[in-house]
Image 1 (cartoon, one colour):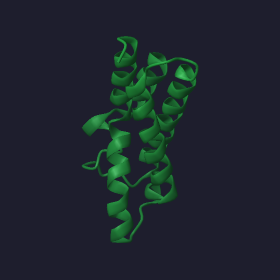
Image 2 (cartoon, rainbow, N blue to C red):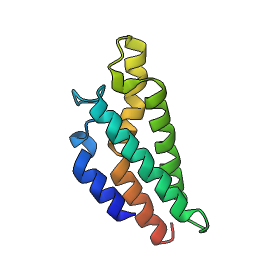
Image 3 (cartoon, rainbow, N blue to C red):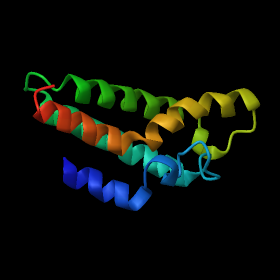
Image 4 (spheres, helix red, strand yellow):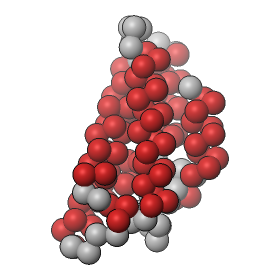
Length: 116
């Protein structure tokens, strides 16, 4: 899993360095859309990896929330620079979750490996 995360995090960044950061001018662009897709793919991969294993509650929770955030970001067409203020506001929460997605997935995996 780390290989996926590291590759995508290197490409897109995370936290305030992510194009999906709510402080980024790129939050409403295809660049954040691409980061969202990569985050969603990593979340799905994480869930596949732990599907047959007990534990990993934190990773399951994070991955599920990220998949929902990516779906919401996509459904609202946030990457297409929406003009409606209500849509732009609705994009903030999923974008913030996506921006922090790679570190959160990594933390969830590490907790799971420690038995949490």
